[in-house]
Length: 277
Image 1: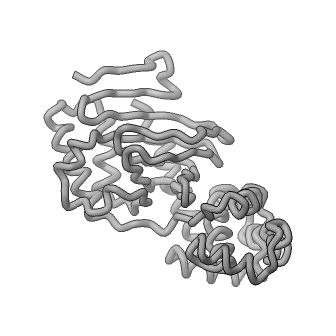
Image 2: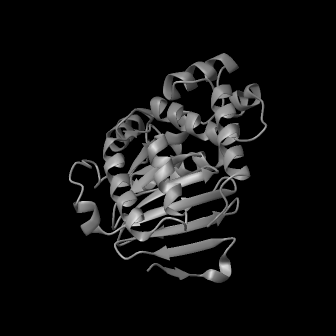
């Protein structure tokens, strides 16, 4: 039988332990932070509502509403919450994951484009009406479905060099997109050419491409609010609204307005439907 912990926090956090796998339902308020930590188990973090960056040693992953992030065991990661977020997390013991060898990228952190099947399996595991045998089959089917899932392009590489990292993280946090390569090079006490070479070697892409992806990922949180598209483009230092829309479509396959409508539809369903178990 599963064990329930933290029952005094029924509206904030509920844990259910099923042995080889376990569940966590948790609400994070806007601005919440969880410092670097790791788990002995693998975990699938699924956001029913809210946008949440998860940072590892080399990348920052943006977990979108109705999307998920796979984190393997012993992986250092930190969490920052941009908006009120509802999470449903499934933890898997290593022996259980090993029973699904076709899950080829189980050893890598990756964002998951959640199919309807994955969504229903994750949310269904929190339904107390399912018997334990049924839940066990659901967990194994979930692992198989994750093995077939498409990775989502919501990761941003971060420099490993401490000096470069210390310069870029404030830029991300404060949206200082107007800063030029010359300015950043001065901050790093390097020439622009040397800075560019070091940055590309460390991050795996040049600064211009990195800045573009960083801005587009940053816009996701702004789109979750009521900020007009033109204001978002201006805040993120795009040349025009059309330039922002074109870049967004190229990365995510839809316009910012379509993303916003889908976000409102999905989170609206969740607010009106599923409550924490």
